Length: 282
Image (cartoon, rainbow, N blue to C red):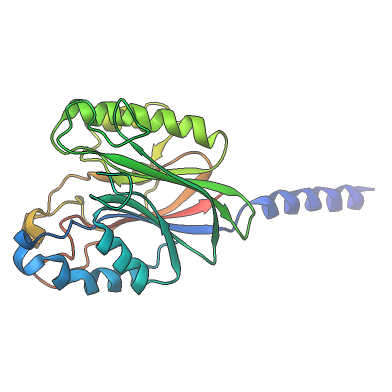
């Protein structure tokens, strides 16, 4: 009888251990810096191949980009055919203006829905919100993770860089939308928030740990520098502030967090450093 109980106990332990997910997901956020001739030697045409090389090397399963104009986003899609993408231009709801685009690996995910909304009092159409100097958007996608069959929500956004009220109200709107859309599904929010951990928008997003937590704060396994923005692309201008974040709900565990500082010895491939997180889908 004792041996029978031991066998049953062992089976139960194996059952619970086996229930733990082995599905690892690599996610990344990267402000590409929009294409402008004012950047001189760091203009998009002179660094776009380096951007592609970095993405090929780190190979995120899901990627959120900010500031990319339509030709920049389409260039990445052409060079990286393993990805599908979605998003809308912030100025006209089609192709004009910067995108908060979402890329995902086609062999790993099937898209179930994708929408873009504006960070304003009228989120369903292009418009400026709360004194912002530019249209600001968030794009979200609902993806079916093929290996597990789970639906995963992925939100990507870019908060205003000049107006504190716009950042704060944008945070409330994104949080409200996430609660409405994701319900109990695993969810990720990432982007360029123009806000560090001491700021009010960051505190709004992380006020309820049951809703969102910062992957940087959830792991002791951190790599890279302590900042994510480098003015004029220069190594010596790297800030010690993290303004590009990856947040998750309790549908994930964090394995690792990294601010990627790959460079050519003088300049980074964008004025923002890409930020990645290795996650485990629960």
